[in-house]
Image (cartoon, rainbow, N blue to C red; front, top):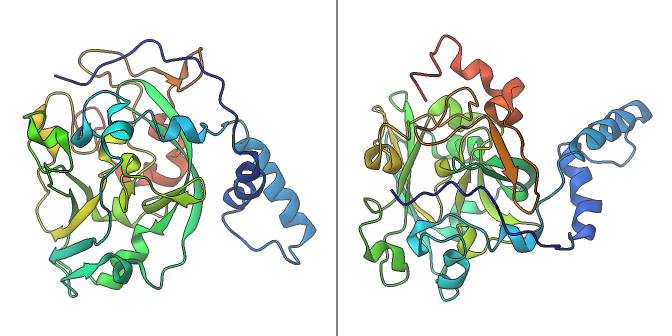
Length: 305
């Protein structure tokens, strides 16, 4: 099994992009609301929300774009940035199929046209024990789903990464069953937190981060975030997902961050932010329980891991 559980991360001093923090962190804290003529009481509430969010210091852009899991480009954390420099993201198409009223092969620009991007600062937790705080730009997946009009039979949505061994050296080896596939239940996909991401730190998404289109589900472990998506399928049956196929005893379909359920080979109770020395407690649902816990009412989250 190639996933490793490093105890230590390289300590490096990287200057944050303060212009981004000053402008976009506030927008994220107020949910992108317009500040013009905002009532004083609302502005004060937004300021308090920002103060709470400020406890999560942004992971520097350099770390976000050089310390990555993207096995299609290699298994070391530095491989994706090193091996994706010539990866072509144009032209790009997204095929939509299955239980949906508007199946088609969409050119990328047509697929994203008409949506207003949102900016969200999300915590991320990798199953290996490291974490980041990343400012994403993207489209709420619920908006995309509404436009595509799934049928009443659609209970799940499946995302597939491009299969291109010529550009992706990791796909030339039997690291995983390619292409990479991930999936969500429809109510998970419709949650307002779920994004189809097109940018990071206010800049276009780089190949090592999943350009041109990737999935971000912040209350789940990072492997749920399929990258470089070329196919979206709506289905009645739960899809078979890549890590669940490769190691079903270690990686369940749901992948909700749950510190009380250890990985078979290490504890999930604590995590270490990339670039920091001390560990901190892992939060249930990665701290997003208020927004998502109701999705799993009545489920045994040790069984459905």
